[in-house]
Image 1 (cartoon, one colour):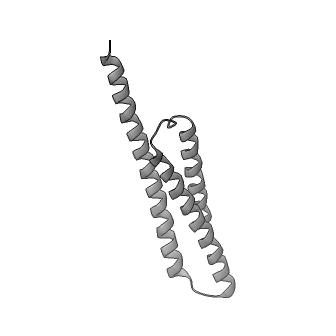
Image 2 (tube, rainbow, N blue to C red; image 1 turned 30 degrees about the vertical axis):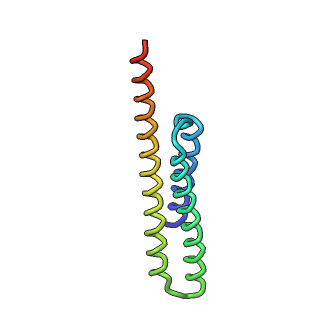
Amino acid sequence: MFDQLAGMSIAGSGLTVTLIGSILKDAPGIVWLAVVYFAVAAIISITANIGLIDGLFEGKDRRTRNKWLTMAAVMLIGMGTGSLGASVHLDAERGNSKAGSERAAP
């Protein structure tokens, strides 16, 4: 499960960087916050996956730890998605106000 969470996190980070390079090139700097959230979620997921495998080989019960790490990774993916959506919204609003001021000028 953690490898899927890591894959989703890396994909989200890659999508965000791609959007920053294209559509969101004039967006406010807060758009980079989504990249940070996705990257931290990927790191947590990879760390949790390694811990889960080590726990299986050592015969230790790490379910509680893994539940918390799963929750943290999913929460960070959600925060990254929300931050990216907010960045797109803010950029669209700024683009609409810029376009409106250009239309108003003769």
